[in-house]
Amino acid sequence: MEIGECFVGSGANAAHLNTVLGLRDGPVGQAWTTALATPTAGHAPFVVVLQPGLPVVPFTLFVNKARIDGDDHARLTWGAAQAGVAAGVADAVADAAMSSAMAASLVVIAAVWVDPQAHDAEMVFANNREATASALAQGRAGLPDAADVVAQRELAWNPFFGPA
Figure 1: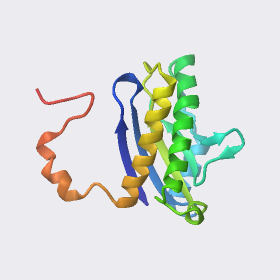
Figure 2: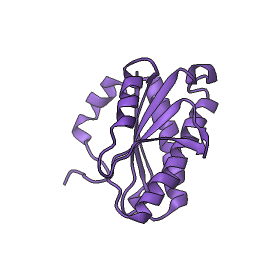
Figure 3: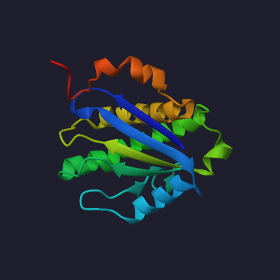
């Protein structure tokens, strides 16, 4: 199992992604299937497609971290963000983060944040594409290293919080 994380962009159009990559017939595959079969109000996991009728390989499940908040947010989530995730997965395969042969035996769970205030479809697409490819590459590389985390522990911050 490979776990990745990436934050790309700034403001409402930023992308924050978490990825889990693993074997279709292993625990990640089981989690993938369970998540697909158990949507909740405002959260409906779905198979990521590059185009209608062309799912990405490895099969990728899009799980929205933000509850759908209106028509515009739904369009950006299911449209631009989903297309960005699809392109990012395809980029990871093309960039040899995983081989095409290996990709067929894997699945990806992509937990994706789309801010309800997002408004620029092209930025949402681009940020999610980059974040997906980067999260998968980081997972493949086994990053971050625990020593790096320990060294940075006094500098904890994120786009929504910073030390005073």
